[in-house]
Amino acid sequence: MNKGDVPHVIENKLSQYASKKAAVCRQNDTIDPQLYQAFGVKRGLRDENGKGVLAGLTNISTIISSKTVNGQKVSCDGELWYRGRRVEELIDSLGDSLGFERIAYLLLMGQMPSEEEALEFSSLIGECRILPSNFTRDVIMKAPSKDIMNSITRSILTLASYDESVTDTDVQSTLMQCIRLISEFPLLAVYAYHAYNYSENMESMIIHRPSPTLSTAENFLMMLRPDRSYTPTEAKVLDTALILHMEHGGGNNSTFTTRVVTSSGSDTYSTMAAAMSSLKGPRHGGANIKVMEMMADIRAHVADPYDTEEVGAYLSKIIDKEAFDRKGLVYGMGHAVYSLSDPRERVFRSYVDRLAQEKGRMRDLALYKSVEAQAPELIAKHRRIYKGVSPNVDFYSGFVYDMLGIPQELYTAMFAIARIVGWSAHRIEEIICMDKIIRPAYMSVLEEIPK
View (spheres, rainbow, N blue to C red):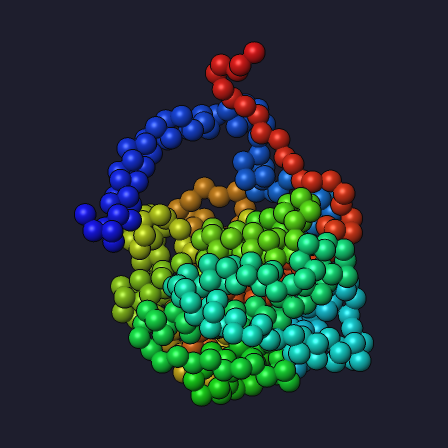
């Protein structure tokens, strides 16, 4: 046996062992679903109506999906508020200006910046948009991967080695670390993609340095593209997408992960790496990729996207588990909280029209609009549902990224580039307000409990 054969032999042995023992794990780790109801356990920390268990308080953001009318709770169009301000109003107030940095300041500091404060903060973000010497070569390019989220997470943990105050968890140190990471995330994502694209896809290596005078959205597009060019519409659409993904009520999986890890006293880098590991899960951050795959499948089986009957007939097959991935899901439809509408999708929709017109993608847009119009009614017809179904932000976000020329490998990373702001705000709030480690309870259902 050659020395080089040993790892392969061990891997085969490990695979055979795990294959044999997986059935043992399934047998001994399966819990009767009826026990959850018997003991009143809210699976996924949600009740039967999908409402989350109250696990904390926050001043950062809130979601509204229902209102009380004449003493009765009724569904309403969804609302998303950042620090007491509706996200639609925040975006409208920006006009044609780019506002990622300004809204990031709002979430971090709890108040809108003055013009002077906005300029100071944006300038600081630009100046911090730099990585340690040779970091791109020695860390990002050394182990390229198609899994960009893993690459970014590795980079975050490595960046901790360059911070002499890594273990400091006071508010000042945490704010400094969070601002640096907000600045660095676009670089970590774009460079990780280019390293992968070069090593795996045999494409040219492109490493553009960021500009301290450009916004986060502009820098991302500039660094991603070989010719560094982008249009004002492209920058505005991406800026809006980042604002809409920045924060979402605090109760989502990755933000809760941020709170949990922060409560243990862990450092900022470990906390954000944990949040990244949560976000990369397909049940959380990868939904827009499933939408893109589904729409490609519909496009392949529907000859005319303007033919509503043909589109509706194929959607019915998807819902009845006869087409696409046969799971019966229309991806991008429905939300754990919203029922009548997702406010982020409503904002996105107008920008989608604008970008599709510029890119000559009106035929694709027609298909999206047909699915958006028909899916809620068809789902209600074919499925027993407890609340309304409407398109969520993921329904259009993948289409937008596709029109911007952003590869699918970066879709979840785009989410992270925005959500790092919300995670940072929640980490700071947790440090200031909480003095207990988050420690939920699990009931043992062993048949024989040792005395």
